[in-house]
Image (cartoon, rainbow, N blue to C red; front, side, top):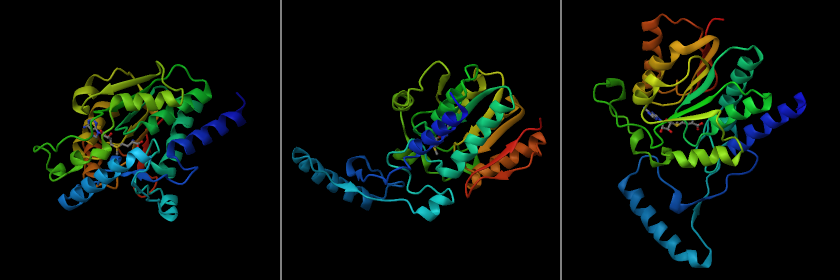
Length: 282
Ligand SMILES: C[S@@+](CC[C@H](N)C(=O)[O-])C[C@H]1O[C@@H](n2cnc3c(N)ncnc32)[C@H](O)[C@@H]1O
């Protein structure tokens, strides 16, 4: 593949994974879940879903039309989460991921690529696509998730006290759906390995020796700390560590605690309103 074609493929798949080439189609009310379900909204939703169900025989449905604000999107803020996109990273963090994966390939930094916290799998699909575009066959993309959403907060972890991510049904994407998303892009093969389960259970025995790109997107203190404790020591010299949720206080606290405990002083670089990354010394 020519370099021009390679770069066009990477640019195109990046847009498609974000569903950013088209306006967001309205979302059928049957599949819409409020982030933090309030009883009054639940009742309204039940009524609307019932009516929508009655309309189905006529191929009609009730749908919710919410478009992202272009100015906020430009700053990397993806809200509401995409109805049909495969990732909620937004343009800036996708650009950053591209930069990190291209750099480790071009500079031959050894190791595999992993994301802890994948939702619909879009960021991992993007990493696999970049490997394919460069014809890299000796690196694996590890896809780590419970595939059932976030855990209930551990009472032993004060920073996660009161967290309600586990109530968000929209964040639960099962393993078969994520596999199917890889398949859609013709990127499901033996260079993709799924680590299914809670990070605390799967990451201690994660079957890779070296990591070139470690991308953390688990939102909570516990999820961030589990990933750092188990995977950061495997990051190769010159490898990248990306923290998607640095904007969230519990995640930032886990990063601060881990770095202090292990004496890590690599410069923290801001990606956008939410994410940061650092590079291990080469
Ligand atoms: C914000 S979403 C990830 C978004 C994704 N990176 C993307 O490209 O859109 C957070 C994900 O982390 C997973 N998660 C969070 N904490 C976890 C844990 N302790 N163990 C396993 N999965 C976890 C959730 O299931 C969810 O899929």
